Amino acid sequence: MSKLSENFGKEFIVTGEVAPPRGPDLKEFMHEVEEFKKLMNRLYGVNVVDIPGARLLMSSLAASILLKQNGIDPIYQLACRDRNQLALEADLIGAAAFGIENVLALTGDHPSCGSSDHPRAKGVFDLDSATLIKTMKLMNQGKDLVGGDLNKPTNFFIGAALAPGATPIEGEIHKTKRKLDAGADFFQTQVVFEPSVMRNFLDKYESLMKEDIADKILMGLVPLYSYGMVQFLRTMPGIVISEEMGKRIKEADDPVEEGINIASGLIDMAREMNLAGVHIMPAGKIEVLVRLLESI
Image: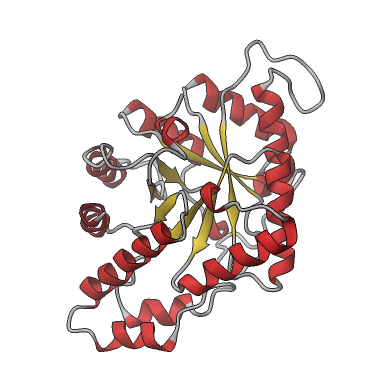
């Protein structure tokens, strides 16, 4: 049983995130690994991103194995964009063989999206995130997607993505319900800067689906470091940063410090909303993650 699955719903959960290297030189990546090792008494898992934005990085599986071998419980991100169902199942068997239990199921950004560095790559999308979740539930029962037997059941703790700021919100609510019904154990959200966005999603989900899922959600946080970062994030779909918050960063003597203060306040709000916890994406600034963990 992973630390994340063992403590989920019992304690306020905090997870982190790391990006694999863009090449086979592991020096800088292993330095980050060493820094994360120092934080594992306060973190419940570390996401390993899977070619986000369709930009080439080392495979999430290889990087997750490296984390596992260094005493860090990874949350292995797996995107459907690049693999057919056979390849997805094969990678999941590989993850299970190395003791990796936390998996975040993602559909994945299309190779032709604006951030891609391989726009001519062919998207596979044989499965989507919900059918990938279903596949993992079957594997936990010792079966593959077509009903064949595995030589041993897996033990995946299955996560899914959630975008509380998506429009129309009703579409995201139905997608979330589909993932939950497929067998998702927990959700990590897209980055949230305004508590009202999270509250609005929770209220509308409960009104439409007649159930409260706050205790399954880790709210995504990114500490703001500069006003340029604010301007960039505002171009991304579903991300809302108020004029007031942007002004706080723009006029701050120390924007990094102000970003930490904002993130700390959002962590307090997550507790007030009875969320399961938060997922902090430090964007390579481990020292900021350390500061936030000290404030919790």
